[in-house]
Length: 534
Image (cartoon, rainbow, N blue to C red; front, side):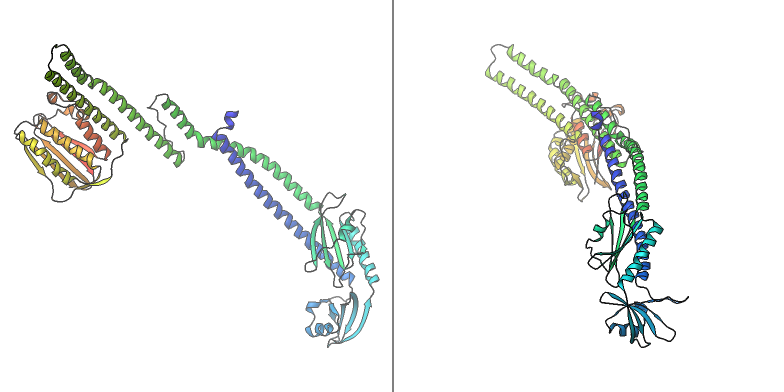
């Protein structure tokens, strides 16, 4: 079980589940808030409608005939409202009589008055509407409305500006509400909405405090039983959906994580096999997996191929060293045994023996260094310099260097290069080594009076460097083998050398992203061509 918890698959699945929980929680909170807010706004509209009806009962006017209506103060003609304002009355509502005069309700010093106004707005008559009568009327309306909707569902309170209770509906079902109603709540724009809780009421209560024109405050509260039931149902359904989706999401997350990590698991298995010595193991590419994983698998396979190649090269080099060091070591042992078996050797003879041993040791060191250079170049262990090299100049320098050697064998050594620079990007010393090895072989295997030609040309986008000789030629069956380490053709075994020169040439050319071409036939000489990208 601990092993499962520590796996990347489990961690990815946990991340999937965590992201799902965060997304679901954000959605749940957003929907819950929106739902709750919309229901509160709908309830607020109902409370405002109730307060408007109660205001009409609290500040009544004369009964109106059918088709007549009271005008709010904002819709009364300006000359009427301006004239009334000069009398220190605050007009609440008014209506126009048939003769053009007006009748209205006005507020002054917290008292309500019935007003009679001429058509010009001049105040003709005023009569106070007693507060006691208004309170009796509003309390009767409170009781009527409370019993109509249910005294457990709604309550009404009339408060003085100092929040003393003046009238109320039955409050037996609302313990503690009188204390809450007396709290000094700031009324922005004359109204305030709030949600409260009281004892013995499971549901919340939506309360509206609104200031009437005479400064007194009416508080209306409605139980939010229906709204709370909706919210509880939403929470219950969401919890069930959340549990089901979390379970499904976790299973799906585990499955997706398993699919995502399948390639990594295959990489791990391959790495274990490689660690146990199976360097031929590769991880198959699958199109169904993501581009990133395919790139990782491709890079892993490429790395494994390179490791396998290096191991094979190391094994081959070890085998070759063990095989080819035997001959020079045997010769050195023979020289020593001869010297030791010849009593009375003079100092000169011992000196000759030491010189022969030094020469054999030097040849052995050169062979080992060449093999190491081939291995390092093929394996990419040694980084190549990236500089601009003029092959034409390098060929010209090599021609001058090998010309005396060719002249000793009366070889016709020719040079063909164009009169323009032949630039490639590469390691100058390595490329010079290629030219030297090819020329050394060409002159060495050409008979006296033979021909050797070195040429270079641009064949866009490549550069071709050729060395042609008039040597014994190479059998077709051996033309690929001559690039192997220590391989020597039958007709070359009598010549000095160790069979590493062409191996080094091919390794350097491949490291420069080039290739080798060979044209040869027995008795007709050979042409070696190096092709490099410009």
